[in-house]
Amino acid sequence: MTLCVRSVSKRFAARRVLNNIDLDLDGGQALCLCGANGAGKSTLLRVIAGLLRPDNGSLALDGYDVRKDCERYKRRLGVISHASMIYAELTVRENLAFAAALHGMRKPAARVEELLNDTALAAFRHDRAGILSRGLLQRLAIARALLHRPGLLLADEPFTGLDNEATALLVSLFRRFVDDGGAIVIVTHDVRLGLECCQRVAVLDAGRFRLDAMKTDIDCDRFAQDYLSYARNDSWNRSGSH
Amino acid sequence: MESFWVALKAIFVKDVIVELRARQVLPTMVVLGMLIVYILRLVSEPASGAAPLVGAAALWVAFLFCGLLAQERSFAAEQHQGCMDGLLLAPCDPGTIYLAKLCVNVVVLCVFEVIIVPVVLIVFRLSVGARWPDLLAVLLLGNIGISSVGTLFSAAVQLARTRGSLLSIIVLVILMPLMVPATFALLVLFGALPEEVGGSGSLAFVGSFKAAAGYMLAFDAVFVVACWLLFAVVVEE
Image 1: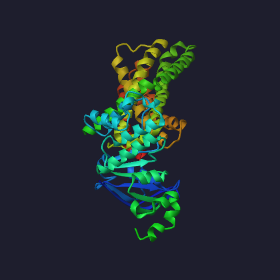
Image 2 (image 1 turned 90 degrees about the vertical axis):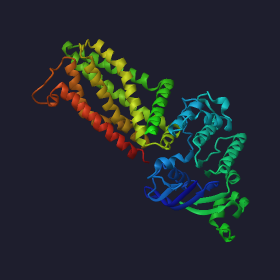
Image 3 (image 1 turned 180 degrees about the vertical axis):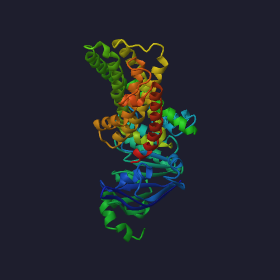
Image 4 (image 1 turned 60 degrees about the horizontal axis):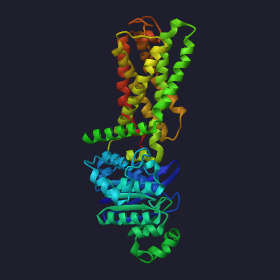
């Protein structure tokens, strides 16, 4: 899996939200994307997901262009967003079966059961999603995103609403996904948790990358304390690591 | 091509299940439809000869407003919990989503028609004699026309986060070229007009029952294809 983002810019009216973004991400890599509110994190994720068209630039996943080979591009993509993308009137199992059908999966029953077990939702399989707690709903959203075995997983604040047990479960799921050759982009304000899941960190500030480095090349404690100052002070760069 | 049919079927079945469980759309449509029929029945009481005219009007007014109500809900439900994003992330053409939603809206309006048409025929004491197949064809053509435009504008309004009245106003204007032959056809079937009409005016422009059906068929074909193609543009961002 290879994600290649080149010179991507995006404006909303007069405001430039993304400014010439370049990003390469290979399979087996997890990137923690940090930034203040309004820095452009969610917009970048929506652009990568193909939900927003960039004003310029190109995006390709395994060489498939987001516009020209849209269907092949989307087959390789899983998304966990702020909203769960789950239907309240359908049961847990029906929601996953519907997502499987949308992705053209043949005989998805075994994969659905596997994910119900992985996300500890097996006991709720016949419950309507509308009665699930925020944490259980988030787990279902994660199962939905992983269902079709995507190569790239985009996760926008995936830890929101999860208790400690569910957070640990999600971290282990992310690790297993990366170990299996997948790539993840995690947007989170919980930097310590993000660092726990990822080998690489990037800081988006006013639509530009201020920092893009491997975790081993930065001072994680100082970064976790105040990542924005850390990125703006350029101390990561002066250490000669990037 | 197979993925097209699989996705179409999946969205269609999902929407039917959601409506059967939530029961949000159809009961509201029936209540509004009955109200429209009741009011127009009261209007027609003083002049008994006006029943076929008002009956035809009652049917189309009920189909139009209740259809728009259903179509507006069809994408409103997808906005909840970001489900529309879930559909757009699927590896299928956005037009597939439009066609699936169109099929659902046509079916919902058909169910509504099954309830409301006998009511109108009874309360206005109307009869179509042996022309049941013609009545069903006219209703289906009107249904498809209303649903094709309504489904597209429902998506546009919901995704633009502009609510309510804008959809109805735009759709009603666009549907006028369909409503003229549709009204003509029902008036012929209810015996209020002869098979062919000459002279001037909107109804005379339609000319005959066959021409009315032809106009409706052409409207449906043009707008289903146009709306299907435009849907990808509407949901682009």
